[in-house]
Amino acid sequence: MRIARSKRILPALLCSAIIASNQVAIASPTVPVAKQDNPQLLLAQAGDRDYCINKVENNTRQILLKLIELEKFNLNYHANVAKQGRWKGWRYFITQEGNNLISLGGATTGMVERTSKFNSNRKLHRNTLETGNALGMAGQLTGAGGSSVEFLINGYHELEARKKGFGPNAAKEKVLAIRKDIDSLLVEREKLLGDLQNVCADTKYLALARAEQPVLIDMRDISLDEFKQFHLHLRRALAFQQSLYLFDVARNVVGAWGNREGWRANKTGNRTSNTSAGILFETSGVLTILNPLISRGVGKLAEKYEARRIRPCMDGVNPADVEKLAADLERVKVIANSPELERADLPLIRSAMYSQHEVGVRKQIHIEEARQRAGVLTAAENVFSGTLIGSTKVASGVLFNIAGTKYYNNGRETNIFLGVAGIVSMVGLTYGTAETARIQIKREMQYQRAKKKHELPGQIMKDRLAKLDEMEKSLSAPTPISFVPHVPYASTDAEPDMRM
Image (cartoon, rainbow, N blue to C red; front, side, top):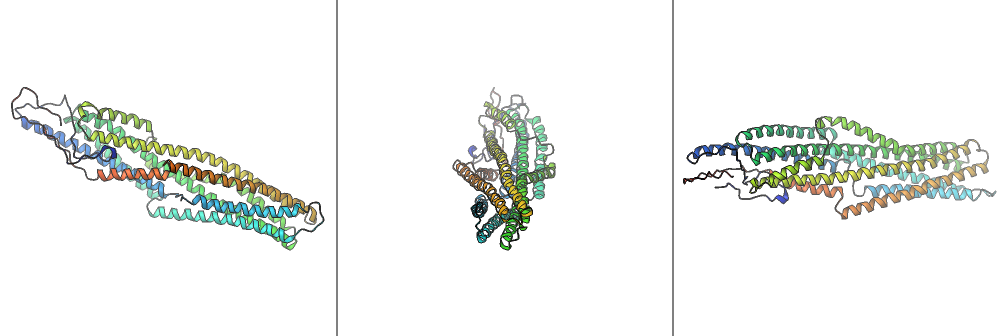
């Protein structure tokens, strides 16, 4: 029997093709076999089968190209939206730690000067107290400036992402268009399988083609669900960060203004200004407490809004189920490795390609689960830190209020209250300094550990994009599959070999 083969067979390890010039071995015990004395009938049957199989193969190729397009869009969307640069964490750490250290220096300066005069009639050094207030103001303005820079950088990255077609509406329309194309091709494929049933009934090839249908649907659902998870997570994260930065700016500016009022009280000798300083410190403390809570609420609202936005993309799509994909893929492997298809290359190539997709999905799920666990822990830490640091600011503000409203004519009592306020502030600032350093050290250690294991999200996505590019390149130039039957020229008692 002559077997039509191409000049090249794509390696299964690259998992990069489903259509190539390869033979497909089909054993069909139930397909009518033409008698040896009627070769024209034999050629006609083979021609119909050849045509139908090629239609199925080309349709499958188009579906896979669309799935690759969708997956590549997902990965590029993740890389461009809510972009987190390598040095973003370090930039924010430097400005916030600078805020804590400078403010701590200011609080310590004022506290030491005041407490040293608790049991003494010596006059306070006004210049020292003014320096303490000036340091507090400078520290908080440093923190506000750092948060402003990060807010603007996020805004710039968002504008760049929108220019590239990764805005919320553009992304929804893009994914919806790809999904409609895939759905149309899946419907067409089901029809083609019905046509193939008429000329190639009960063959292993037909069984394989039918077994692949659920796998293709699983891949579609998983890719769409991946877009959903990426979109909601990134939009929630961006809204959370921007809200967090705005509240950071607000609380630090208000706190700096409070230090300015305290400086004014020392400069002019008008102790009633301590009342204004106290109100501002209290406001700054309340904003510090509410910041992580309100920012998380803003993120949640953004997530719900975006979920409604992309609902048309997800209608009728099952949640991602990698175990179902694995089970469906196992059925494909069993048929592809059957003796009847032992000389077929395409089933093995496709099985390898599907397996690669399953591996990529599992890695992505692992990343997302780790991210969610880290997110829960970070949220709890932020709430605790905000409550502790904010409470010390509120307590300090209350002491300033008492001094400014009740003891504005009593220098000794004012000094005691403001000295205690400095001690309270130092507690919160010391904790903030240590906690900010701990978080950054922990983050850097996790980054280096993941980088060494090649488990950074960027590394994994880069690998996935490279493999998808290889697949797309190989799938872009299909070669028709030819099935040439063996037509015997010598009379024999055996039936002709119908394997192709």
